[in-house]
Amino acid sequence: LRGSRQGWDNNPLGNPSANGRAAHWENRIVAEHSTIPPLWAIGGVGFLLVAAILISFFLPASSPKTILAPAYRIVDLSELGGKKTKVCGFNGVGDLVGEFDQPKGKKGAFLWNSEEGFTELGGFGGSQSRAYSVDKNRQVVGHSQSPDNHKRAFIWDPERGLREIGDLGGETSDAFSFTPFGGVLGESATDGTSGVRAYLWTEEAGMKNLGSLGGDFSTANVMNEKGEAVGTSLLKDRAQTHGFIWTATSGLEDLGSLLPEFASTANGINNHRVVVGSAELDKNETHAVLWDASGEIHDLGTLGGTVSQGYTLNDSMMVVGWSETHEGFQNHVFLRAAELWGDLTGHRLLEKTPHAFLYDWKSKQGIDLNDRIDTESGWVLLRALGIDPEGRILADGFHQGTLRTCFLIPESGAR
Image (cartoon, rainbow, N blue to C red; front, top):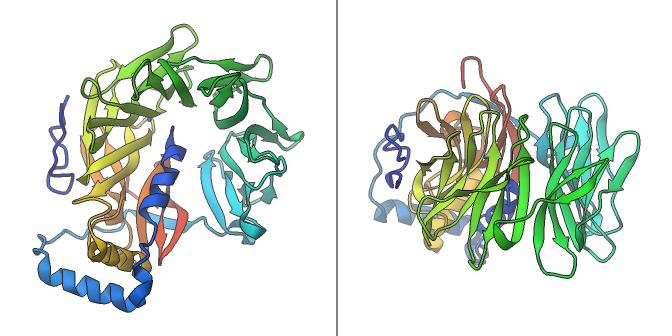
């Protein structure tokens, strides 16, 4: 069941083996692996350039890479309404949600579209709020911290404004997405324990505990139009997670993993009951995976490194996520210096950073999305976070040294 270790550049997975917690889990991965090492300050950009030059002498030459015509136009989403913004979700009809910078390091939740402009959603008195999802009625869900900095799940709508949606008895809760039926999925701490459980909230019934796969943690990420939801749970008596699929009639169903005794996560699902996420092959190797409608798991491989993650997919079976390239995120300071030089200039001297990918399940072809944008754009795309039915992709990455979010808009004829 193992995928090719050579990566998609050398083997586009024409012969593969047998849907951020969801994407937001991985926010801390990007934060960790995009942090500039303290040594960078010693010599500034000059140090980086010298390091990159030294590396060019000591590393073997790579084979020439075919330059493809740009397939995507980039729309920067990092300064909406005159504020510094991070987009976390969109509804396909022009509405964007996420967080924006406030004074003194605080973060606020926002809703934006080109007609209504920028709307601050308010908060519960703490220092941080974030909106994750918006539906086509412009309802928004996310979390806001209380004055004692506990996350509290919220729902917002234009008529009633910001409201808490409660909890399962604990002090914290979070809301990640809408169901097609007006409900909300998320996670909440439970009463009297350290456990966290996935929930389904509706206006009529309130918050329903969806249970777990036996462990003391579960989270629910997204639901398709058939009422099938996916998420991740700890297993009983094991410090491992497995992805699950949930329905009202069957409850939680363990999706399993690539190998016994190893972990998996389930992040996205489409209307064909196809699920994407990740699964471990060993303690240092995790690959993006896809569970088909029969429940069989497929290893999607990587862009050459040892770690990849599938975030979501659309009904056209286009999967997006991120992958390590070649030897991984972190090697030693010289490699990181050259990596940072690429972040600052937009010219990639080495392919070491996590890169956003698009994988076409029908053709079994995966691509590095950095190969399908203008090479002079100044962008290094790190993660592809979402894709809509028209193939528009929400991504984040570095633009001339600054972490930003953007839309990738398919050019005419591009997928």
